[in-house]
Length: 420
Image (cartoon, rainbow, N blue to C red; front, side):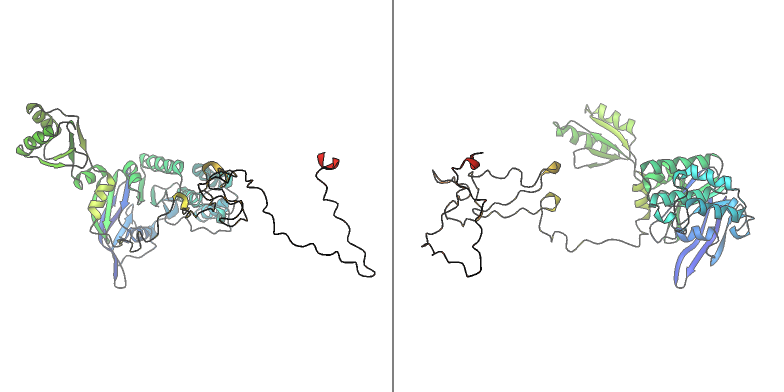
């Protein structure tokens, strides 16, 4: 069991933790929640003896961490998954920790299999992904088979399969009678993993209760009631009846009624007595995230503001492609096509509407304006004839210089060679 009594920690003029008292009992997964800067990491460092409290004390099994005999075999912790020498392999890292604590090498291979790193055990940790580093940190925490475990953001960087595995691992450890203390910002995971919650804000205790009690204490449960949409008078009638019975009724945007102050059976009886048909009558309970936000809304230190440049950029087409401005007689390529189709696929066919022959000036020979067909009898592929010029007299070759060889690539169109 972890027990903190009057725990206070100051760094100069800043008080990170103030008069914090709580207990983390074995056999349950205890979640440790709080906004950024609330003192969670400082508290966990004081539990592990890494920081000395300014006042108060914290014990594990009745003893301060520094006085525990062979502490790594009694307490396992994951505070920073990056606290690994990048040049060491996963197995070498764990083997060095095991040798310092008198743990047999066989246990190293066991925990590598537990966290799923047996295939990369001999790879250097500097090449590990964030999720692989998390698994290695969890393996280090499990190395001594401890009875007390502390995890700070254990699912950070893990894929869905890894998150599911960590969730089941913590539940299994707690079911074995161990003390499991988990700090996380993922409310969805805490809702399905933790049995008990300790919530702090600005270094002070805000809540210490079960997850179910925490949600009930920090949320307003209500009933959602819906009547036929085609009969708005039924909704108005029911609203009046429920209000007279002492309920507080609010109309939601979709036309449903949010009713508080009356249990569901009573709402059903009143609707039946008033001859009002109900399309929906369901209870609503806030999620852990909603309850947490309501509890900690006054203890948040870092709040975002509206972006002053929001909407400043001109709207673009999906994919960031700006629609080109069409010009008379010029062809603009269409946006990239889905499925890898070339961007010029579907261009206007030669001679069709909107096709401009390359190299022709607008309005010149062979030019077809956008949306117009070429002139009858005109070949858009024909090269416009150049202005006739008087033939230049053939120059005699200079003395000692042979005449240029004839171009053999030019043939008469009527020659047999060209016909072939």
